[in-house]
Image (cartoon, rainbow, N blue to C red; front, side, top):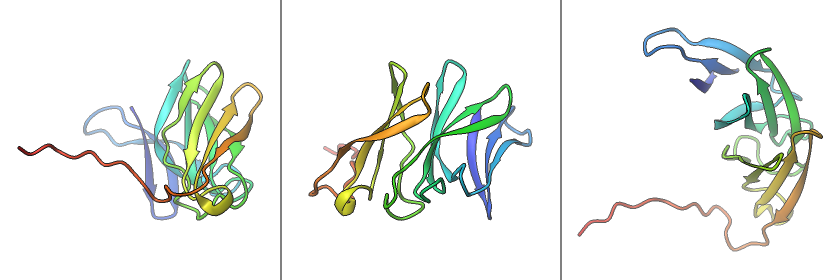
Amino acid sequence: MYRHTLRAAAVSLLWLTAAHAAPTTLYAFTGTADGAIPVPPMLNVNGTLYGVTSAGGANSAGTVFAFNSATKSLTTLYSLPQGAALPGVVSFGQLAYSHGLLYGSAELAGAGENGIIFSVDIAANSGVVDYTFQGGGRWCRARRRRHRP
């Protein structure tokens, strides 16, 4: 089982082997080009784990990364665009995979900081902004509510 953790300034990917075993650090982010503050969950595609950070990267706006658990190596696939807003609140981690592309979203990004949808080609290690929200939904998040009779 993989888990992200944030302890003081150290941000790491951990491997948990048993309910009471001590976690093993697999990778410690530097907070620079590789990103900082990883956001769960990670996505397993054919044995490679994909995830996002909410800060760091080439533009200090977060990254999409691939982690090879066999070699314990991390590759930064995409740095979110400059002005993708405030470090630590850019991306909310949920990636989707389809036909060699990862899809994600970033709040407070793009023109007007209304949010973006982006895609990353994992074979080419490159990404693009596919859609920029134009407004009206900033800071909106769905919440599940329990029905009470």
